[in-house]
Length: 349
Image (cartoon, rainbow, N blue to C red; front, side, top):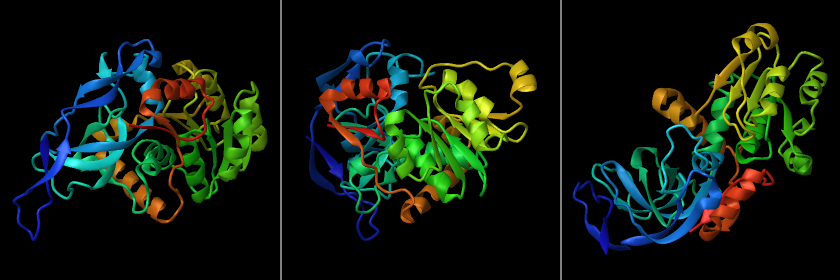
C-alpha cells in the first residue's frame, strides 16, 4: 500500500500522509500491435504508475475514446506509442497521489486531463494541465473538455478566425468535436451548414445547425455553394478526410475562405501547389492540439480561458457520453471506426 500526501493546511508547506490505499497492479487495456483496435486486450496485472515531479496520479472514473486512439492503434499517428502499450490518453477521475512540486491539488480533487495509458484504473497526468471537473459535473460529463471542445474552439476562433455573420461548414457534425463546433459557432452568430450521415440529422438540427447535409452525397460542395448563393463558406472545419477533404476545399469561398483540418477519419487526402494556385485559392490550416499546446501555449491558454467562460455561461452543457465497460474497449473503438456513433464515447474502469 502506498500513502498519498494531503494538501498543506494553514499555510504549512509540510504534507501529511493520509491512508489512501493504492494497489500495486491494475486492470488496463493493452494495445499489442499496430494492426488496429481488434488487438486491444484487457490485462489485470499492469503496474500502477507512480507520479513523477509535477505529476498527479488519478483513480480513473471515466476515459474518453477518440479518433486519435484509432490512429495510434493503426500506426498512423505520427510519433505514436509502439506496442505493447497501455492505450488511451483522455481521463477524468480523482487525485490519489501527488508527485514532487505539485501545489493546488490534493487527494480527492476531481480533474480531467491528457496522459498516456488512460484506459486503465489509474493513470498519471501533468498537474499543470489537469483541469478541475466543473462543479456538479461527473467525470463522464467532463470528458471532452480537454480534447474535443478545445479542438473545436481552436478551429473556429484563433485558427479559423470566425466572425459574426459568417458561414461555417462543420463536417462530421454528430461527433463529439463536431457537436461542440456547431454549438459554439451558433453562439458566435454564424450560419452553420453541418454534414452528417442521414440517420444523425435530427441530432445535429437539435444543436442549432441552420442546414444539415448528407455527408455521403457526392454533390456536397455543390450543395454548400447553393446554400451560400454561389459564394462558398467563409470557414470549413474538416475532419472527414478522404473524398470529404476535396469537398471541403471546393466549398470554401475563393481567396478569403479558410479550411481548418484537424482529422482524417476517412483516410488521407492530397493537395498540390497546382491545386492551390488554379483550383482552390483558399487558406488551408492544419490543427493538431498537442502541437498547439507545445508551440503556441499562449494561444492554447486563451482557448482554455474562453472555453471555461462558455462552460460557465451554459453554452457547452455537460457531455452525455455512451459508456462502455473497460473490457469492452475494443467494441467501443470498433463502433467509432465504423462511424455509426453519435457524440462522445467513454470507458468506465
